Length: 241
Ligand SMILES: Nc1ncnc2c1ncn2[C@@H]1O[C@H](COP(=O)(O)OP(=O)(O)O)[C@@H](O)[C@H]1O
Ligand SMILES: [Mg+2]
Image (tube, rainbow, N blue to C red):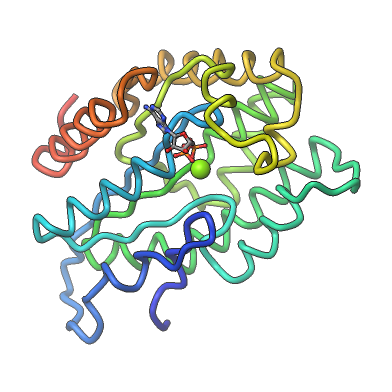
């Protein structure tokens, strides 16, 4: 496999390859597992910005980091992203949504995330399987257990070591984005986004060992400080409760 095709975030040539300088290093029989961190949260909660700053800071501290995002992060995934987030009139059914997101996810896991973890790197991913549970489950009303099963097939059972929920009132989050830049989901009514937010909070309550909730209504610097501390704690002590 070549260099991971990660690292385009909101159209900016980004960190996937640049942060990953492990090309050519030899494979040890005892594979050191990396750290898989996902950022979740409603629209405009700061996932993209915080993920980018985390990648920069961790790299400055000497870590090998792969920064990626969903949907996307691979050539296939970015094409699926165009279909999913375009302001199209495709009338995509929630079940088709769920399957398309998971198709992109399967490719991302196989092509980018698993190889990076096998190299012992830190993988930062803006959105992952929990977004499907929150949006197509809590938001659009599909059965959560069915969505979990689809995601399990897509990921081969891979779960994040740490999931940071950037929690903010969706009204505040959506207002942070320019109306012209809103994607298909960001244009859905506020009630949908409130269900999504509550869904994320419910997921966090159900699995407190994996999730940490950060109040993302505060200044971006405070949000970033908290997220960095959480990632550093995870790297230092991966088996903490
Ligand atoms: N805590 C914050 N306070 C004020 N503005 C923020 C904050 N977090 C993010 N933003 C701004 O809101 C917009 C959306 O942030 P972004 O990281 O793209 O959100 P997401 O990826 O979660 O949808 C950006 O313009 C970003 O700079
Ligand atoms: Mg984003």
